[in-house]
Length: 216
Image 1 (tube, one colour):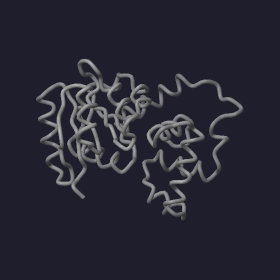
Image 2 (cartoon, rainbow, N blue to C red):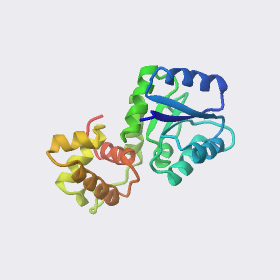
Image 3 (cartoon, rainbow, N blue to C red):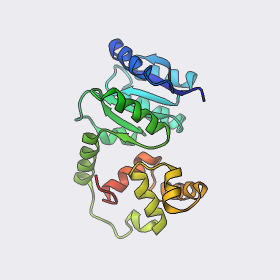
Image 4 (cartoon, rainbow, N blue to C red):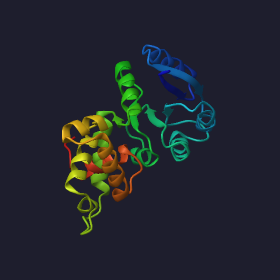
């Protein structure tokens, strides 16, 4: 393994330098490029093919949300972690854009490194404050439950898998806990995504939180 390939996108050179120094603390992480705006992130992604992008939310021109949306549409396997100064930005748009993580810039170095490994393994990584705010936003915007509520379309096993996804479990861990193969887990996840009309594990996890399938 060559390491987790990281692209840093932030319009402040000092922030980029600080992030690079933090990432250099982990021998399994390799910074492959730095850019100062969203369009640059899109262009560099097409050239460098990173595994994870650390994306500033507020940048001139193309912002982090739009850049994430374009990148995730073209490269669904690439993970994006949004970094922002405050926790009052439009988090729902971040989720819709396909971001796998949402962290505040005052995050501790160890937590940032942990988040990178988490999203690289296909699991979401959100700051606890952000998770609580997301739940509040979903509750505020929730429509009355319909008779054809999406949960009713899931099998009992799919509900178990979805709950474990929302708890941040990997496919391997889910397979171990439910005594099924990883291939079966992947099949369940594919079915869950299709039935819930979500694009990835992050959106599925947020759905589970919204429906109170897990405790936050």
